[in-house]
Length: 136
Image (cartoon, rainbow, N blue to C red):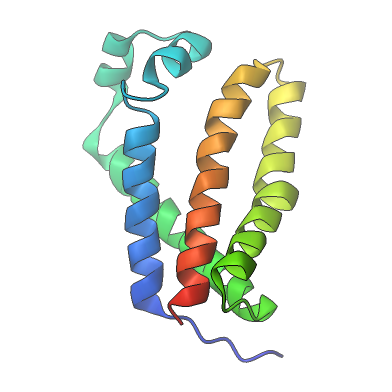
């Protein structure tokens, strides 16, 4: 078994960055209007459904994602920005991007919706891979 060394501060920082990026990504500044239309909801419906506990669940998921990405970055031996970005890209491509694409296709959801959602995940994984590779 490979010894696993994880920088927990880096994991926490990456989780916070992912959370903040999500807030920006799905804000009116970027993709909120298009995303809201694609999911068939109004802003009012989304506001009513947005319980504070949901944001806690999202942050916990970001921590789990950052931790697993840190483990993969460590196993890959990534120590440069480019190698960290490559690990993030490969994790997105083979795990998050491909599996979510299958779900969107089989549930007859718009590819444009997948592009927005998966784009957020890709950027998160790229940033996370870079930070985790450099801050070991």
